[in-house]
Image 1 (cartoon, one colour):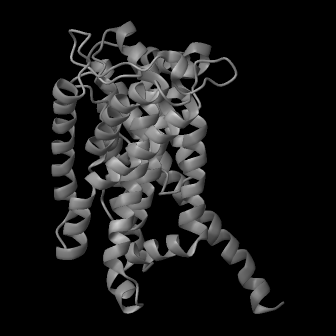
Image 2 (spheres, rainbow, N blue to C red):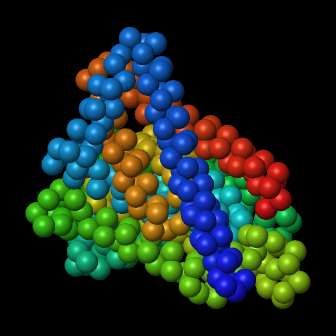
Length: 358
C-alpha cells in the first residue's frame, strides 16, 4: 500500500473534524444564547418553551407570519451582502444604519415625484440606483480617511452613521416633508406603484432581488479576480501592496460597493413595504446583521439560511413578547447574547488552533 493510500483516510478524518468544528462554532453560540435567554425568562416567571414555541408558530408555521418572515428577509439579505464584501476585504463598515436611512429617505422622496411622469418599472429602477449612489457617496469620507491616512474605519463609519441618521430625520422634517399631513413624513407611494407582489401573496419582489444580489456577491468574492484582490487586501495589506495591488482604490471601491448594497436594502424596504418614511424611523438593521454575517462565515449562500433564522426570530419574537408579556426588546437581548457567545467560541477556537500549531 502506497503512502498516498495510507494518508487518504487520515486526510478524510481531518476534513471531517474540521467540518464538524465549523458546524459546532455556528450552533454552539445559538444554543447558548437561547439557553441563557430561557433562563432569564424563567427568572422573570415566564415559560421559555412557550416563548420559543410562539416564535416558531408565528414566524414559520403560520401562513401570514411566513409571508412577513420572507418580507423581512429582503433588507437583511441585502445588508448582509454589503457586509460580506466589506468584511472579506478586512474593512469594518459599521455605518450601515446611516447609509440605509439616507437611501430610504431619498427613495421615499423621489418615488412619488417620478411616478407622476414615468412608468412604474422605470421609477423603481431609478430609485434603487439613486439610493445606491447616495449610500456609496455617504461612505466616501471613512473610505478616503482609511485609504489615504490609515484612520480606523470603525470610528469614522460609526460617526458617519450617527450623522446619517440625524441628517435623514432633518430631510424628512424639513426638505422632503409631505405638506398635506400633520405627521412629519415624506409623501406616500401608492401600494399599486410599489414593488410587485409574488404569486398574489404579501411578499414583494424585493426578496428575489435580495437573493439574486447575495448569490452574485458570493460568486464575485469567490470566483472573480476582483473578489480575490479584495480578499488579499483583507488578509494581508502589506502583501497586497508588495504584489502591486492598488490598496487605496480597492478600499474605496469596497466601501462604495458595501454601502451601495446597504442603500439598496433601504430602497427595497420603502418600495416594497412602507412607501414613505416617518421622522425618527430607524429599524437599526445595520448592526443587527453583523452577527448573522459572522455566523455564516462570510459565505453568501450560508447567509440566506441565517437571514431566515433572524427573520423568524424577529417576526415571531414580536408576537411572542406580546402574548407572554415581556418587552419586545427581549429579541435584541437574544441577539446581544448571540454576539457574546460567538466571540467567546471564536476565542476558544483560536486558543485551540494555537495550541495545535495550526
